[in-house]
Structure formats: C-alpha cells, structure tokens
Image 1 (cartoon, rainbow, N blue to C red):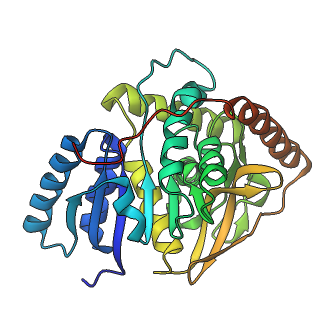
Image 2: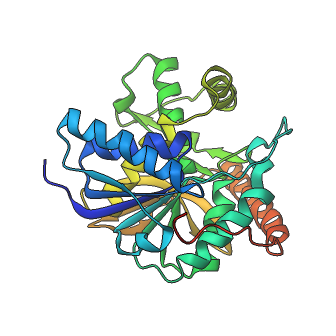
Length: 307
C-alpha cells in the first residue's frame, strides 16, 4: 500500500474527526496524518489511538498531533470542528449551529490564509460554513461534503425501494444539505434507464435517517467519513469521477455535482425539470439570506500553539 500524498490534516477530534482519521489510516491514502484540535490533549490521544490501529493493521499512515499552522504542508485539510451549543431546532436542524460554528470557522480561516491545498468542510450548516471559510481564508480549493452524503443516502434508499443494487442507481441530491435539498428525480436512472421515483417515500427517509442515527448513537460519523474519503480520492487526483460537493455556484455556495479529472473539478449539473429548477433557486435564495447574517459574527479564538 503506497500512500498517494505525503500528508493530510484533520481539524477536530469529535465523532466525525475520529471516523475520518480511522478511514484514512485504513485506506493508506497519506504517509502522515496530522490531527489538530482546540484541546491539544485530545489530538494527542486520538493520534495515539490511531497509531495503535496503524500498528495492528499494518497501515503506512503515521498519525501525529499538530497545530493548525503545521497543516499548511498537507495536500488536504478536513475541517470537522463543532462549537459547543445546544440545538433546540425541530426543523432546519443543521442551521442550529450556524452562529456558534461560524466564529470557529472564521478563526480557522484566519490561520489558514491562502492555503493552497484542498479544504473539505464537514461542519454544519456545511454550505454556509464552506462559503464562509472560502471567503475569509482566500483558499482556492474549498468544498463541503453535505450533498455527497445526501446523494449516497438517496441512492441507497431508492435501491432498497426498487429492490436493485445501489450501484445500479444513478442520481443526485443537490442544493442545500438540509431542508432545501433538491432530489433530482427527473434525471435519475436505474441500469441506465429512467425510473419513476417514489419521491415522498424518498424524502421521508432522507429526512428521518439522520435523526434516527443520532438517536441511536448520538452522532452521525461514518457516513460523513465515507463522503470525505470519496471526495479526497477525487480532489487529490487518485481517481477520476463525479461527486456532489458544496462549491461556488452563482453568487453563493450550493451542493452541485463536480466532475474531477486528475484533481481538477468542473461543474456538471444534471438537467432539471421546472420544479427542480425552482427548488434549486429557492435553496440558493435561502442560503444567501442566512449567510448575510453570519458576516458580523465575532471570531472565537482557535488555539494556535500547543499547551
């Protein structure tokens, strides 16, 4: 197993950060895995745990704790931080952390100004946090993984409803990673052929699935980690293909399909029917309105050195 890149950084040692770290060690994607956290002791502990995994598994990936500044030499940085807040929302649940997470994302953007590698944002609301980090940091390659996870859930759900293998289903979920997600039913195919999509059943499952996971194990972790790994393989040029990522679209940031060729992305939006086009525009307007409220959020310091 030969690592594809010298180093990948992960910021955040919570459920998703841990799952991403484990996936990177198992995949052998990088020679070094640098882990940063607001609590340096947690970064060191996670690095030790992953080092045990490396030794047991025979992985070529060497984990180590790091500061955010030390991640500048990485080929990619995954941002999986989450501020402390109580989410009381019952609708638009992912928006519940917008204000709290924005201050942390802004602080990280200040420390990674003009970083030239790939940044993958996992922090919710991911479309807003992706735009905020990109604009505040000036980094040229910033993506969010929300719509990739939505699309994976869509294909899995439709495959089960139609009793076909997941690999036979081709379709996208775009727009917001949240209540304004757009299911591209009109362009969905199974084994290359158009199919009638039971939209209400699909939407019900996509809405219920994250809550069901959270209720059972407190946090979604492995689904987001899988989306991160799939995106990293494309963004780092390990393989070519299409994935759905939050990226610049019009005057904002939305989940859209991107075709990666040797690491270079090009938007490849599917044809939309009139209803889907209106839904996508509604998602864009919604995100633009909420984003305008985040610009004045003060920065919450993120430690720049080791304690």
